[in-house]
Length: 267
Image 1 (cartoon, helix red, strand yellow):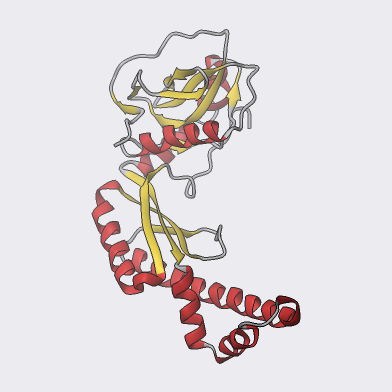
Image 2: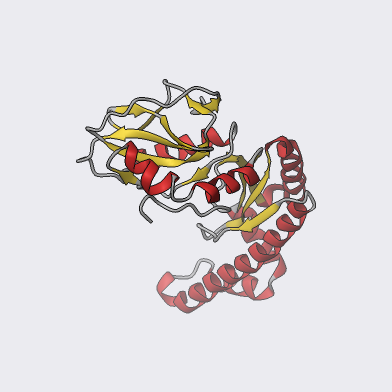
């Protein structure tokens, strides 16, 4: 189990060290303290800290002001900090790349200006986190299903079987287009089935765009962390319903990326 970056406490702020830039991950309640063993972006990386103002705080870490951002490790660290915290406390995630000069800038450009807005949003997220239900069609199973259902797919498959590629170019293109369109239609139907099943839990659901040609379902939902067993039950029921045709997994708890929009410092 991943170490969480945060837990609740009533301790005070850390001291400010102005010689480095400050990377901001997200917004949490002010009664959160950080774990000194959890490190953020950078190599070497610095511990995660909080900058507090009123009822809210920013999760931050020091970075080298001259270091470019954007490596895969940077992106992974950004998500890791937010997702680990989301299982313990409400989190408003900032988009990747929020950097300010120092801790005073975190307070002045972000926390003070948006204090009431952020505090209200954190209150609504108390006890909640994002989950992702993602499924991908098994290639062999979905192709067999399409061929069984479509006489045109069977005809095109037979036309190109054991034939030279250059002689059956049109048939191959037509079959590829038919398969892509059929998968898109199946994705739409299966996504609708998943959304209806999730909405029976009375939770917020947001479909995501497919990222792969064989994606079957890609849905985000915002739910009480205590409802995770119910989400797992729904995922299990769908997996049983779809059988080997869909490889399905439930991911979470995660930070609520699909359900909140947080202003960057100075934005």
